[in-house]
Length: 275
Image (cartoon, rainbow, N blue to C red):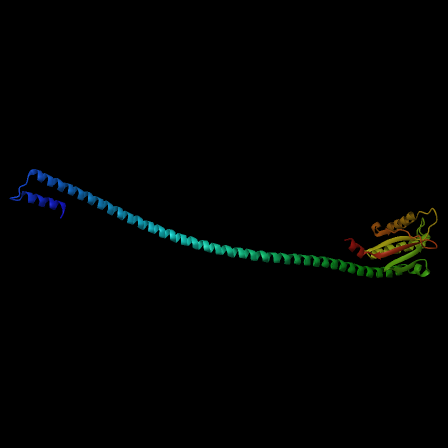
């Protein structure tokens, strides 16, 4: 029975006919009823507050559960990402090692290839140099053959009379004449003929050079170098450039009267070697 109903019932009971009670008991009953009502109100308030706190706790619990679920989901994603990253890292490391090995092998191949290339380049350069030298030698041989032919034509008479000797020594055309015929203060007729022939033939062969050497002993007091320079000057006076004339050391081992050796020879091979 509700508190207010019980209080009304109590009042009715007290004031019912034949049930008169003292005022003190009435007040006492009313006070008790009021106390009980106040207790019930406090209980209701406590119940309401407890219910509110329970609802709030349930709401907070649901919020925490959702947060935990979200954290668990994020943790699972992070774990998956970590696993994927770890797998990718291992794959990358394996790829790096593989590429490093390939690079080392490629480096070895490149060094070997570079060595082969250098050797082939050196061999090619040597072959090209040799080919140029052989071509120059072949051209020199052809030139020397032409020089011999032209000298024989130009000096036919002195060669036939024996005043001038024409030979081919080691493939080089060589003229010999008595030093007195050419190295004197004024060359005689045969000497002048020989010098003129040398100049004309050298003009036909652009690569030809003249090498002058004296063979045999000369009388005491004779300046051999001066004699050779005199011949060189005579050639220059006839138009042969000085750079195409070479004065070679004398050979004193010969016997008999000293003679001059004038070699007119092609020099392509020498120029090729100098390059």
